[in-house]
Image 1 (cartoon, rainbow, N blue to C red):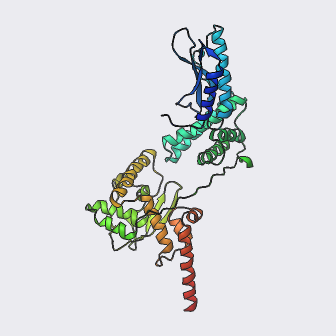
Image 2 (image 1 turned 90 degrees about the vertical axis):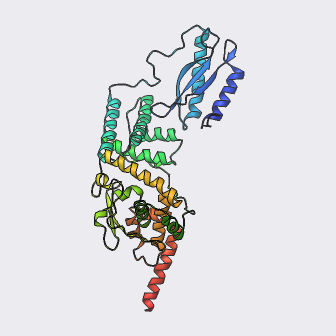
Image 3 (image 1 turned 60 degrees about the horizontal axis):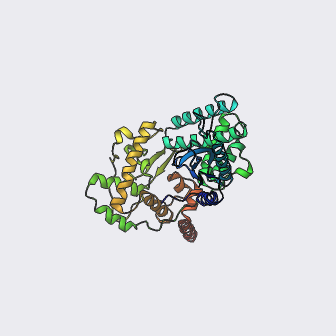
Length: 398
């Protein structure tokens, strides 16, 4: 059974009406169908099926209308009107096939809009290559956002602008509260800046999406992690898993950590290619398990290490592959994810009485913001503040 989409109910209602009210071809009803494969801009064309030729078979015709989750309520009636016009032409004996080479979106090859789109595409491609961390799929998504804006500009006969682009994205996503709209908004601002256009987002288009972290209630205790780690028989594998547990790093970050200069007290310098920041992380031991990491190197370290600079695309892709292997290894050995272990590290730092670093230092060590720390570790922060208050009280009494 096909998956239900945003327009399923409306399409069913329209087809029901066409089945009873007509128009009819060869005394048989027509019906509308949305293509499963989207166009470049993410919209999906609507076709009409019926007995358009003289043979006893159902054939399809393009209505020239494409819909998105944000505009289907307006565009489906337009598709019905176009389908009825095709039926009228068929009854009069006219050819109802689309013109040869017709794509539903004939794009101009010259003019201001064409130059804007060309410059914007070149900017996105250059930006992706320069960052060295933008996956091909991410670039494809960004180009699709641009195509959505281009299609709206063509429809309205206007040039690109921040308002036009955000109108197109709001319509495409059905609002301004989703994460994709927020991500697209950020990219379109950069495009407008590149094109020398005003890039201030109007108040009625400011994204309303807010990240709400999910509480992690299934993270194993230190004792359980310790027990599972002792069962790992391969010493190299055990050190690899231990390095993720004890430092709470994102798995890819162990290739950006300065293992050759690991301090005697365990402090570890880490470089984040994502935001080009550096931080120092410290070990948070658990249970009675202690593994010496002096001399430790992750798999393929010699060819993939990137301690002080953003790697090129090839190396970044290889790091992601190795990180994915580690991400799959940890659940098999410990029964939890690497993200659970990162959460465990942050929670332990905030609540362990042996840790004197303040919350801002902990956020910096995790290469995240204080705002994200507050959202993710609300309960632990309450314990952290109680701990600090008790410590100040003891100091004052002493």
